[in-house]
Length: 330
Ligand code: SF4
Image (cartoon, rainbow, N blue to C red; front, side, top):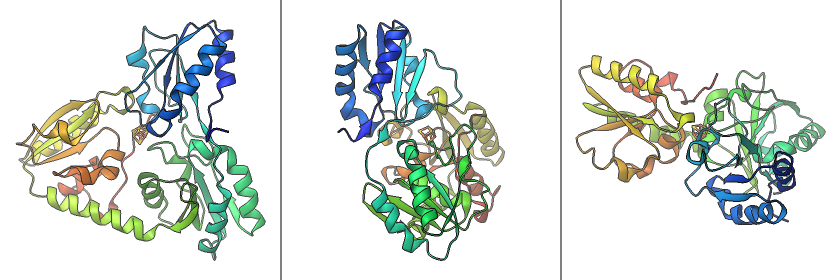
């Protein structure tokens, strides 16, 4: 059995039903190794030919519809659920459910959740199908599980930088089933409650307070380093789902008013190498994917800030009011 369920039979059915002749396939980084298996099955079972996107893909905000427009009749995007965006070709989103056992890690979380009754339960698209089983287990162990749908997300789902399903819940603590720095920190900041992560990849559970403190210390250091910056680059993504040009203009204005200078830089993928030529800039603000400044921070020599962090640098926001950046689609 594969580690993930790609629902290939449903895709094949759709291709046959709609008489589709060409299909684009797009996988996030961790799932790309399965691309040729899926393509093989589709080409064996239908008359359609497949095109596999090799470019990096981090979220549903980054669907390859623009690249594949004109070349395919359907794009299948794996690993994420849909965002309310206008796509250039029809896009079928397939969550790619994980077949990994999560119950070992969830079982380990019980001792860390001791003393907390109302538990906010949240996970990513890969494990959503297990929420009922996890709920039964927690409730069988005396907990009351609390979940809600988010804006554009399913019950108990975090999707990329959309944390709406976890906000404003009446809970004592959160159990996050998944992995990764960004989601873990986002859940902590948006709930301000104790957060336990049940990590199926490590098959263990851990309290994330120490981890969150470490990330926040790094963020504080980046903000402090940018305090004397005179010239900023404001990065705007050319990816449709990550483009926030209006926000970039507001930030540029804000910087210019402080007798500092700002330049808007447009990029598709953001990497340290591509910023090297901008030697005369002291710091960068990323209006593209909010994960970049948090997850990739160490790769960049100059401070890479999120928009709320820039507000702290400019004295428009207090450190105590630190907020995680989010791209909202509503
Ligand atoms: S912009 Fe949001 S949804 Fe897109 S890759 Fe980044 S975190 Fe994920």
